[in-house]
Length: 295
Image (tube, rainbow, N blue to C red):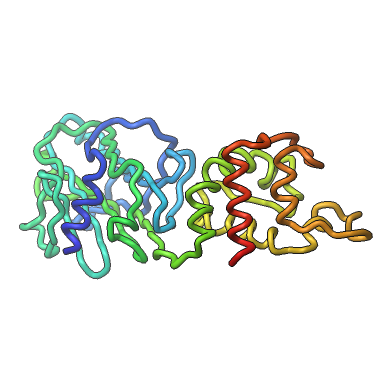
């Protein structure tokens, strides 16, 4: 069952040994050989929710991510024929990707190990795109950690296998039993309003870093939950106005729900007009606020 799920998930994207445009992938420690000898081969891997700008190890249930890996083979193995292996550990089971793209259970026997890319001419750098823009949770892979390993062999070192002694670990969060407002937030607010607009100033180092509304970007673990909670706390804080403008504490407090709708329209907002009056995004924000207040 797990093998079929892995095949489905990883085949949602093209899985090829091919060059990809990335920032430097994190290096995986402890390059090893099955004989126990040393190796100059190097292994890299990273999972990203922002197209490789940053790398993380934990992601939300429905967060779309990319996974990329790389092998830098030993110099003497360049242009020799060899095999590349891709292994995934899920729970207490080991899986190997076979040439067809399917994942099969591996019994840890070298005799039964099959290559993902058999009999290929090894390049100095073998870049492997595992998945592109895939959310693991909805496919059935959630509340778990996957460990990904790379390995290769070469006719220049018969009987030896070179592999990443440390795994690339990717943790997928559990599905959240969420409220109506959280669903609205994820659908209508998170991307179009927070990530594409407000966060330019309302973040660490931003012009509004000292504001009560402080967001994290999409590369952060559980970013949607974090930013949603920030908004809900602000909306439900009847002294939200006093937090934003300390002088307001001396007079009538303005509730956070009113400020959240008025400020983006440019009313007492240092960032000017961010959402036009009558716009769809402003209406979505108002609907979100109303839903939070009703819960």
